[in-house]
Length: 315
Image (cartoon, rainbow, N blue to C red; front, top):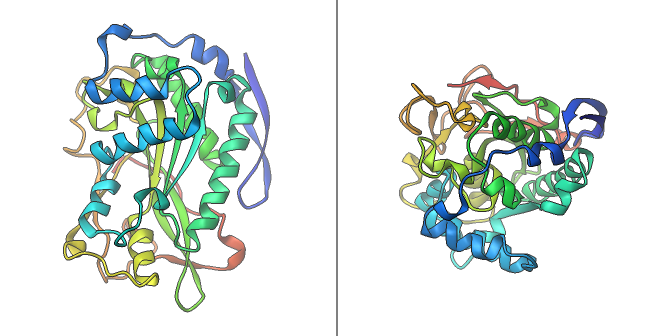
């Protein structure tokens, strides 16, 4: 069954969205792995909390954050560890979380999109004050967690990614989608910084895309190294001694390997990604691929919820 509907964009404009497969039907059709196989001791331990019936939200969140702190599955976590963060500050304060649980998925595409839209807008309003540079949308469901890489999983992931980047839906494989994150500078002006988007999924365990593994199902990781680095300065904190050479890897949102046919594809991290030195003092032209990553795009206050970056093919 296909469903259609309207979406209000972050900037207040409404638009129609393409027909979407029923999320409930797509979940029911996902090929599953044998649960006895497991996903490694770290993820299996997290699942005992995250996927247990009746788990309280704070316990689910604590289990995920503990896993993230240990695993650092994305280059942003390693970037932050390299350049440092305010002494005594808890890492959670710089990360916004949006949970989409089984009951949310059961209510359908429009409900999921509306919940993600609300969380995305709230994150950007915190970001403009320099309070957050990272966002994690977690689609947590046992059927997603135990889904085998397959065409069905790939298509459902594209649908879920489209609930976040609604302005780009339908989302394609092997495409770089940049988010835009606002920051108010010391002089009162506002600039937009590019933020990388990357889909993580439990079924990446044991495969070529191992670095994309995460407990609980599927997640979209969004983060802006340039925004984070500049916000440190605005808040009076100096980046660590390794800041000038701290690399950040820009990658595709949804890899084609999620469908389970990754023959001939490069191993994660070996190629196909743009590596940036995000704290360079250089200024870049709008046509430069590094534009927006280390120095922001000046905007007016009425554009803090916009995303002007166009999707590009894998770099």
